[in-house]
Amino acid sequence: MNALIDNDPEDSRRREFRQQIDAAKARLPLPHLMELLDDGDHAHTSACCPFHFDEHPSFSVFETADGHWRWNCFAGCGSGDEIDYLLLREELTKAEAIAEYLRLADEFGEDKEP
Ligand SMILES: [Zn+2]
Image: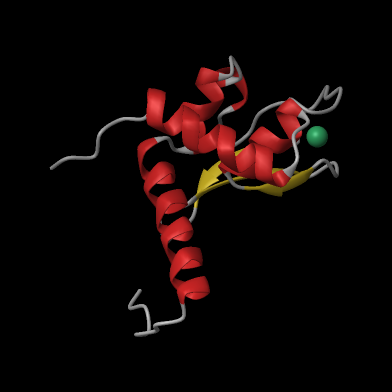
């Protein structure tokens, strides 16, 4: 995506933050994050939900056409990305989840050097 040329420092900080999160997602995609949290058993397109008592698989982890990972619980636990997963799993605020995710990606992420 081509960012518009913009000299607003607030916007540029937000853009930098967004890029930081995108880079973290490239290094620590959702299935890898879930493995790190000992939730690897749930990291499938059809799995039991890690967030509620689930006798029949109502949970799904999948990659979107644009290469982002998402999770979804059809029984109502919600859906989201890596940060939302961490938020729900560890009962964090959004800000805490982002900080923790960036830390995990930094520590455990794979290098995406060509
Ligand atoms: Zn659920």
